[in-house]
Structure formats: structure tokens, C-alpha cells
Length: 79
Image 1 (tube, one colour):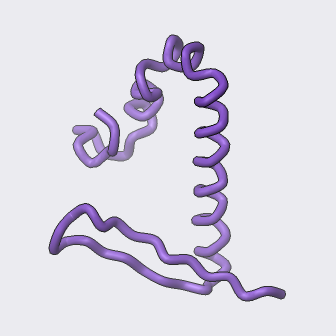
Image 2 (tube, helix red, strand yellow; image 1 turned 120 degrees about the vertical axis):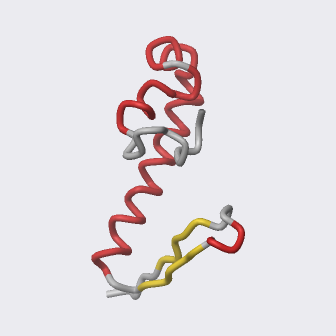
Image 3 (tube, one colour; image 1 turned 90 degrees about the vertical axis):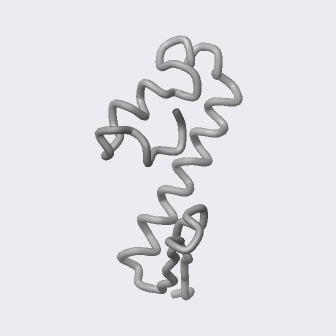
């Protein structure tokens, strides 16, 4: 098959920024799928933003809070 690779990380933490590169399918596949999922959400929000924000709050904040792995919500990218 075709070789695939991915670079993933967080670069907004100054000296604590980190990134990783891999060709391991066990990481390439799920990271790629998450990116595709995010692209789906962008398209859905463009077409149905008013309805979705009416149900889940601005920028879907209620969903983000519901599924956040950080109890204080501070590490999440939307307030």
C-alpha cells in the first residue's frame, strides 16, 4: 500500500509545545479520521449553525463541556 504519515501536536504552549511524527497505521488512521470528522462538522455547522447553536449553545459549547476530559474545562479550546 501507499505509505502514510502524520504529524500531530500542540504548538500554543510556548516552551511546553510538543509534536510527534509517525507512520504507524495505529496512529495515522485514527488521527486522520479525527481530522475528517472535524471537516464534517465544519460543513454541518456552515449549513445548520443557527439550529445547532440553538440546541447546543454558541460554538456547541454545551456539547464540548459534556464531553470534555478536563473537569475545569480550561484546557479545552472553546470557552
